[in-house]
Length: 411
Image 1: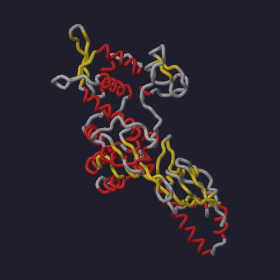
Image 2: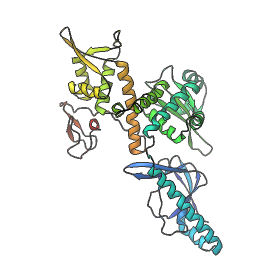
Image 3: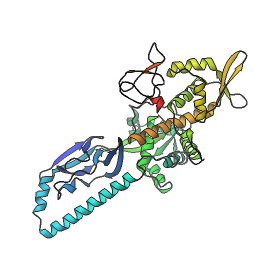
């Protein structure tokens, strides 16, 4: 039987949903994800691994089309066979065998479409709201109880030629979150705990780890398997207590009752909060735990950082989101006081929640996307460039007048 061995790179597609079935693919190695797109969001159905067939429903049904798109999750090797060749061979089969094959094909079609319907009718978000505490709680708790000390691990591996060294030769600079709490966690162990103790899928844990890596809270170490495929081996996790803290923060406000406004990330409030934390770095709090900074100096800093004139409305915005700051006069000067630790913790959690929201909206973690506010254009602090078309947009405008792009502070 003539066939063709083809290698696809990670991220490449074998076919798209709705395409006519011209070939049947048998997966020789790697992992293929069957997905559909709805409303601009990628929804995952199931995986196809070594030995499984794709496009086989077209053998006995000439008008069949692919019910989902096939995207390579790793480097994938397949055998690609024209469906017309398999169809002609099937048609030569004895009538009794043809009836049997047709029945199996119809049953398989029904099962696949049933899976597709169940997924689409359920919560299609990669990490649904009610799963956030469980997913990140799992990672934080398991890391603290089963993680290996990162400093000792790093010292040991620097003395030997190991996959760890190779994996980190081209790694970025040390994470700003690296600390004495940093640990190394075996992926096999995390998967085991996730499934047995938290009843959580490893795929959802992987997506959460992708978010943590993007935010430099984790570094994922891969190694090659016998098929020369990259497989996750270890996770270097920084600040596991803060990762667990997101789970505690989210579940408290989610089940507190009322409208959990603090869980809805407002980009303006988030960036203003980060500015307050950054500007007050090194300032000692008073006996009440309140940090006090010069109001005028803060306004200049915020203007320089994100191009926004800090006003009373912004303080009210922070209060509506659950962060309280008080402006007061003292010795002919104006100061603003706030709980820096609380601001720092909430802004940290908002950064994670913003990435989770983006993942749920698009179905993927985009390492290139920056959710900070755009900087003001030089020479005019009231104007910023549109990230889509570079048109000049007035600070505070919700949409670009040229292309209609929704500005980040309006999200």
